[in-house]
Length: 116
Image (tube, rainbow, N blue to C red):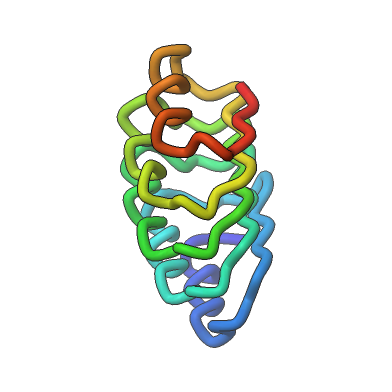
């Protein structure tokens, strides 16, 4: 899947799960997910998503699970996740997130299971 193809998902506003693992999605494509207000599970593992792309997730207030395995996300990017209080599970394995960044995220999301 590409960013252009991802744009077609806006036609399905009631999607609850989107698995984009090992696709060609970039930060630019994530803007198309903003309208998926019911999204609960988002798998971005092994994509080209970076810190900038996570800023597009702020409207996903129902998001419960987020997989960022082996992405170029760092402490600067996970700042965008702090307001997603519904997150229950976040995978940060293989990212550039530091222990300090993880601790800061835990303060904002104390009930989330964070895997690093």
